Every structure is written in structure tokens, then in C-alpha cells.
Image 1 (tube, rainbow, N blue to C red):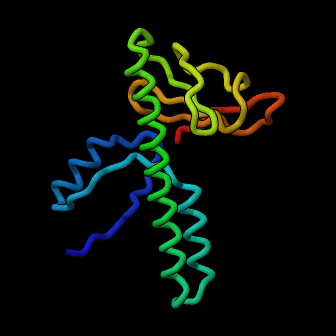
Image 2 (cartoon, one colour):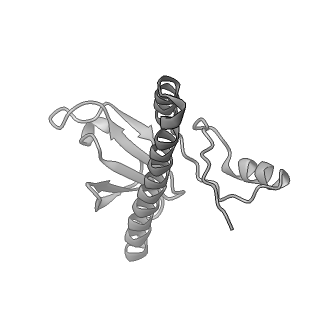
Length: 147
């Protein structure tokens, strides 16, 4: 049996369930991950356009690896957040906070990104992942990016 990995590029408003149903109706069996990878897709498109045809396959393989790494990272982050929530049932809702792959706490809501260093991660109780981006370690991050 042969399997193919495909990435569906979406915006942050894409309904994962609706996408899953549409794929199923089209006869496509797929695990849908809500990946918003416009930057990576744009980079891939520009790389492919500039390469000879015989080199495009390696570039596509690199993009496939990025997708798999992105899925694995999200799964790992969600697993850490879920473990924290299981051990702290009194902290309902809110976001579990991580830095460099380690949980450092919980907040009742996503707060001002300037209170976090760039790269900090917040995982909501619904599984949404936000990454503090921009800024610097001294002044804090500039915004939350949906990962």
C-alpha cells in the first residue's frame, strides 16, 4: 500500500470539521491538522519556481519534512499541556504556558504578549496553540501568532 502526504494550506478561520467532511465526501481518507503554513508554502513555491525540474522533488521532500515536523511539534506541545491539565484539574480553561518545551504555568486567559519572551507558547483548553512572536527578551513579544 502506498501513502501520500499532502498539505492543505488554509487560513486561520478554516473549520477543521468542515474540511474533514468535504474530504470524506470526495472519497479522500485523511487526518486533518489545522496547519496554517502560508509562509512555508510561499517559500516552497518560490523555491520550486527557481529550480530545474530534476531538483524539485528534493524541495518537495523538504516541505513534506517541515509539515511532519510541524505536526509532531504541535502534538508534543498539546501532550505537555494535556499532562499539565491532568495533574492540575483545578485550573480550568485558560492557557497552559510553555517555554523551550517545558511547561512553566497556567493563566486564566491569553494575556498581553509583552509579558512573554518571543518563543513562549500558550495552549488553550481547546488545543489552539499560540506562539509569542516579534519583540525581544527584554521588552517582551509583540504579538501572539496562531500556530
